[in-house]
Image (cartoon, rainbow, N blue to C red; front, side, top):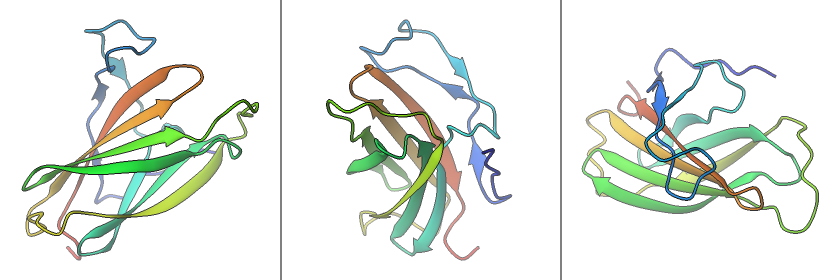
Length: 136
């Protein structure tokens, strides 16, 4: 299932692996804009977004925390729900509504840093998405 980005979404092309990931530190990974792995963000209100990821339907990436980094920057950490079960690669979309800090400057575009972690395999990576102000 290929996903399509809406015209209002912009995506940074490079991802920096986090310490402890399976990719050597200092490496950059090129992501395709239409990658089925890429997260999709969409405003659901002035201080809320929906986050959609595609992955295992049995072990979806679930938002764990939201951190305000600056007036126009937010980090959302997502982690797979895998435990001891097998996680099939069935490319199932999962969508979660995420409340954002109310002191963000939503009159400007907001930079979202998504930190995605797959626990059992130890894979961690980042994606960056810029959304224009809500309603624009």
